[in-house]
Each structure stands twice: as C-alpha cells, then as structure tokens.
Image 1 (cartoon, rainbow, N blue to C red):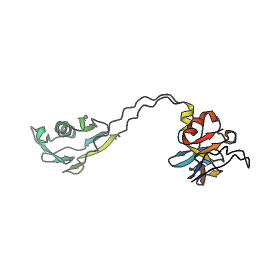
Image 2 (image 1 turned 120 degrees about the vertical axis):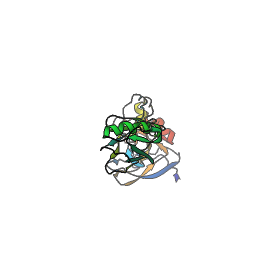
Image 3 (image 1 turned 180 degrees about the vertical axis):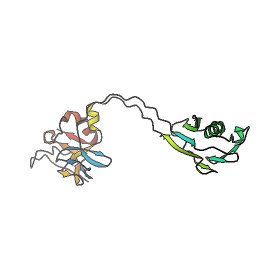
Image 4 (image 1 turned 60 degrees about the vertical axis):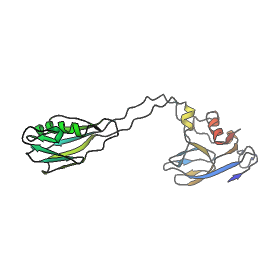
Length: 238
C-alpha cells in the first residue's frame, strides 16, 4: 500500500517529502532487536539491524573436494564367495582370476583386495579412480560431487564394509574485494517504523523521503555510506 506523507515535525522531523511511501511487515530475527527509525536488513527472511562490516579482500577460487569412499575387506575370502558392488557381482576364484569377467582371487583379506581392485578399475572407471593398499580399496570421485557411496553386499557375513572417508565439499567461486559500504549494505531492506524485539512483527518503510538526521544510525554507519543503496530501493535521505 502507498501513501503520501508531507514533511512533519511531530513527534520527530522524519518524513521529508511527498514521495510515495511503501511499507511491509517483517518478523525480527531470533536474538535481535530493532529500534525505531533504524536501517534494517533481511537475513533468511527475518529482520535484523544493519551493522557495520569492514571492507573485505578478494577471495580466490576454492576447488571442490572429491569424495573418497573406502571398502575394507575384513576377512579372508574363500573361492565361490561373492561381493556385490553397485549391483555388479564379483566372484572369488581359487586361481587365475579374469578381471574383465569380474573375478578376483580368494585368499587373505589383502590378497583378495589387491585382486578385486583390478576388476573394480574396469567396472567403476566412469566415476571413480580405484586405489588403496593392503585390505583397503578406495573409490575417489574423478569429478568432485559425481559418484555416490557404492552399495555393498557380500555372500559371507562381515566379509567387507564400505564408508565415506572423505566427504564431498563443493567449490567456492571467487569473490572480489568489497568496500565497507558494500558489505554493510548487503541485504538492506528499509527503515524500521517502531522498536521491536525478537519474534515481533514490525512495519518497515520500503520507500519514501526521510531526514537523515532522524535516522537512528548504527555505530560506524553513516548516511553517506548507505545513501546510494537506499536510493536504489526508493528510499531518499535529505
């Protein structure tokens, strides 16, 4: 809803002109409170007071971390035992296993793991690099974020286990340097019409003309700092 307010001096010289005033209501965020005529911002849909944030330096691109899943052969394997990974059945044989046929050699845990790796390097080559040592077999994502934790079942109870030993972490895009004004104005929403505490609903002026001297400016925040950002919202300070 819009209204036109003339310059006023009661109770404070706040409204400065005829520019249409748009208002909204918002809930004050947990742990926060706002003051009447204080600049406010939205954080995840909740209202918080604007606070000074210092200038920040540029951040470099941070590469994503590829997930690593580790399969552990926990016991000796007997010929005829099977290990099923991602729906593919690998069969232990007594001698001369053919990796392309999803065969691996029976024996101690480390012997079976070394042989099973050769077969996995063929069937899991799309998403994973297969590695590891001793009785461990690692599945490392070739492209970070692509390749879920493999499913696992065994014909002999407790023959093997699998878990994610290195979680996937998304990369971070580079960020340019930002001035204190840019950081401070992030999320700027308007001017609170009244005092309000956490959980309260309060009216916020979204547009209009106001006397800057009537604004309850937070510490280290000035009208010069926020004026251009308020202007882009339709709030004009005199």
